[in-house]
Every structure is written in C-alpha cells, then in structure tokens.
Image (cartoon, rainbow, N blue to C red; front, side, top):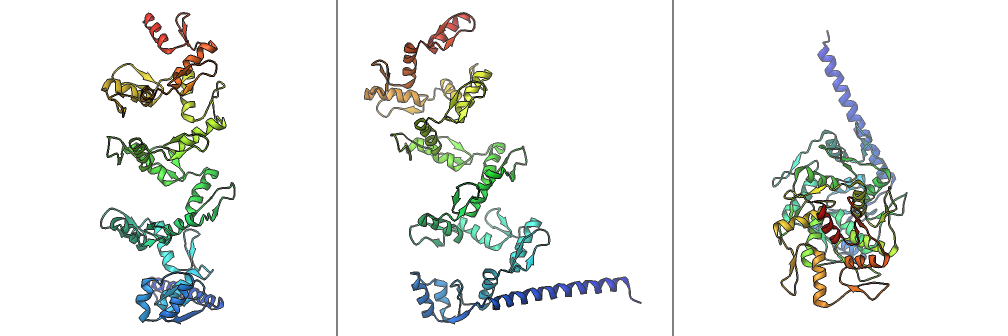
Amino acid sequence: MITIEEIYDFKQLCLQTESTIRNLRQQDAIKEELRLDNIKVELLNLQDISDKYSENNKNVPGCIEEASKSELYYCYNCNFINNKKTVLIRHLQVQHTSRKSFKCSICDYCSNHMPNLKRHMLKHTDEKLFKCNVCGYCCTAKSNLKIHMRTHTGKKPFKCDICDYCCTTKYYLKLHMHKHTGEKPFKCNICNYSCTAKSELKRHMRMHTGEKPFKCNICDYGCNQMTNLKLHMHKHTGEKPFKCNICDYCCSTKSHLIIHMRMHTGEKPFKCNICDYCCSTKSHLIIHMRTHTGEKPFKCSICDFGCYQMANLKFHMYKHTGEKPFKCNICDYCCTTKSYLIIHMRTHTGEKPFKCNICDYGCNQMSNLKRHIHKHSDEKPFKCNICNYYCTVKSELKRHMRMHTGEIPFKCNICDYSSNTKSHFKVHMRKHT
C-alpha cells in the first residue's frame, strides 16, 4: 500500500523534473536564437587583435596581452575579446539576445542571464550577502562590493584618454566622456530637459509627476531623491560632519562647506555677463540677474509687494502678521530673521569677525565693513538722480530720497509722531516707555 509520504515525494520529484526540463528548453531556445542571429566567433592571434585595436586608435588592453599565449575569442558584433570561450558565450547570451527567459516570480523583472535573476531576487528578500571588512557596508552583488572597496584603497582603474580624469567604475567614465562630446542622450518627453545619465532623467521626471518615493521614518517629510533625504535626516540627528579647518563652522553638507570656504578665500566664481557683479553661489547669481530682467516671481497675497527671492517674501509677510520668531536668550530682543539674531548675539559676545585688511577696524556685520572700506578709497558709489548727493551705502541713499519724496514710513502707534528715519523713531519711542 502506497503511503502519503511516498505520494508527496513522487510529486516533489515530478515538480523538480518539470523545472529541469523547462530550464533546458530555455537554454535550447537561447542557443537557437544565437544561431539564428548568425553571430560569429573567431579564434584570433595577438597580431590580429592589435590590428583591430589600432583601427580604432586604441592600445591593446593588458589582460589581452597576458592572454595572448592562449586562445583568444572575438565577437564580431561588438569587438568583445576574451581568452575563455565560456565567458564569450555568456557575453552573447547577455548582450546579443532579445529573449529574456529567466523571469521573477514576484515582479515583472526578466533577464536573459540566470545570475542576474538570482541577484535581483535578493532585492525582495533584503538579504545582503556581501559585506565590507573595513566598514559596515553590505550589498547584494560581489561586483558592487568590489567597487565599494576602491573607496578604501583609492584605486581608480578607469582613466579618460583625453584629460586626467579617473574613476572607480566604467559607468562613471562613460558619463564623464559626455562632457568631452557634449552628448546628452537622455531627453525628457514633457519639456526640453536633456542629460547625460538615465538616473538624472529619472530624478527629473519626478518633478513632472510629483512623485516623492523617499520618505522620512520620523516625520512626514518626503522628497524625490535619496541625497535630499540624507540631508534631511541630519536635522533629526543634529549631525554636522563637514567642518571648516579655519573657523568653528560646521554643516551637514559638503556643498555648504564649499560655499562657506569661499568666505575665507574670497573666491567668487559666478559672474554676471551684463555688469561686474560676481558672487560665491549660483543661487545668488540667479537672484541678481532678476535685477536686470525686472522679474519678481514672488508675490504677496495680501498687498502688491513683489520680490526677487522667496526669503524676502517670507520676511515681508511678518509685517502683516507682526510675527518675530527669532528671540535672544539673553535679552528681550526679537526679530524676523535668523541672520539678524546672529548679528545681534555678537553684541553680547563681542565677536567681530569682519576685519579691515588696511587698518585695525573690525565689526560684527559685513555691511559695516563695506561702509568702512569706502573711507579708505573715498569712493561714494550711491548717487541721487535728483540732486548731487553721493554716499557710501545704499541705506543712506534710501534715507536721503525720502527728503525728495516726502515719505515718512515710521509712525508712532501711541501718538501722532512720525519720522523718516528709524533712529529718530526709536529715540521717540523711549519717551513712551
């Protein structure tokens, strides 16, 4: 009498046999496709290889020279060369067959190479078999670990034959070469954007779709690229890994540190093509260009105010709300911007980070230093277009213009007093206190 266990074992054997037959059929189909594509494989000597490389003005790779004593196999489709026939067959299966017989049972992924499918399946299991013995990095593929190890060894085997650029992966070298050719093969089908890498296009498309796949596991923040999420996480951890080697400044991003260092070096790489203005950041140049175009894209929803940048609109809105969110923890001072609070705090600490390079003068904000520098040069760049008045700072010109316009912006909310200067207004308010 046949037991239940024997029936179960027989069923398992049938399933294994069916799977084996299916795999064999898939392999036969790939081999048949390779034959139908009429792909040629030829056994070559080193001289033949050298001739083929010299046609493209390239040197023979060292690995080919080392393998010249053995058999060399050449693919006519793409000039791929290897000394192992099994490697060439795998190359043909992966690169020159349209059939993708190995399919994932969980998602729509399919491949024409079984190891690729195995590597893909690790994404569903979250299993990372390959671990770095130097740091905590782990990954799903041996090739990824090999690339990662180059960050520890400093090895950059892929070199540009036009400039001195070298990198850790063939893919990065391919992207770099687009800079020399000017090629941008990846194009957006919605706008005119084009780029050098598929990943850049994918990130750009999220601007059109509004997709934000990267989510913070602490708050509701979401974004369209992983780098932004990493920067956001620093807000929760308080981590500021990038430190200035001149002063105590530290920040959460390398780009912010680069911009900060320009304060010390005086470097201003971004230049206006209309006037002599130059600055340390691209964003400042974009804002400056609006002074030439007259564009004011940021509008107040309460009054007619418009401005060149979002920060100015935010500060303007405080006038309507009366809000002063930044408060001094030593005195009762409060203000509308963080930068004003930083300047104010220097009155308590006595810090004067802005120094004159001609005399011993030092001050707590850049605008005061600029005003002081004019004393050495006798320069008065700000001119009144009504009379012959000249001055060293824009704020003085603004105050002067009120004499012509009759504007009196500072008004007391207790009595009828009004003034065209803030300093006089402050003196008056002390009478009420």
